[in-house]
Image (cartoon, rainbow, N blue to C red; front, side, top):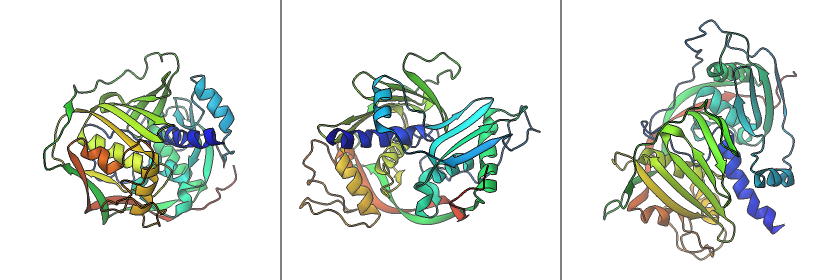
Length: 357
């Protein structure tokens, strides 16, 4: 039973990565973390301007519960589970995904930029569809958007409002960061290495490799490389990244703080630092949950530890991991509670049950 509990946090990270690249991943290197989300739009590729923005055939059904024993066995064998978005020229599959994850892909936004009822991030679905002749995989988000509007009666609009965020700023003694060469893009058509898996993220293709030591390396191409490892003994998440910007690091922290839908905050880069860096952090899993709950205003478990400005415990966790705040401070940086204008996609209406196939 204990091993299952240790496995779940790692699986949560994997599912987040695979289901739309929503795990601790770097943002595009050229885009600041505070950049407004793209307004909802349906676009077709330049090579097929007249392609229909609808799937030829599509089935939508509730996702079956995960078989953790099978997933664990597959991952130990170097075979990632069949989860998340997988799109090619002929088919589009979105497996074990929440409606919020599907909306994020269809509208070109991030999950934390979606404002709607909690159930959007709870119920999971499997969608399998055929891409019509003349269309390309680049048309899939627009076709997915049409499917959500048709089958879930989805209605949404963009908006901007001031929200509480965590600002990533430079500490009083200056940054303690090691610079890194700019990341290199990979050829998405190149053959995969043994055990490597390629997925379609919201910002482009992603390649993921499960390493012999249990860690997972996520190659984002020109957006950097991130390696995650969940240390079961220390109950801590270790993150090593190279070729990332401070905007990318802020995005990594945002993803980490929102593991498990804990209501964690958005981290916004306000360091003013340019360039690419190598960043290594180790954060206790207990603190990730505590930070998200504190930011969402949920009660904390009694612990007796010190607290940050956002109320997260700093000394209560008995594991070997650090708090998010302490980990950031070791880099000569700091997280501060601030308010900033945030662009979001407001969900006006959505049905919990899709119309029949």
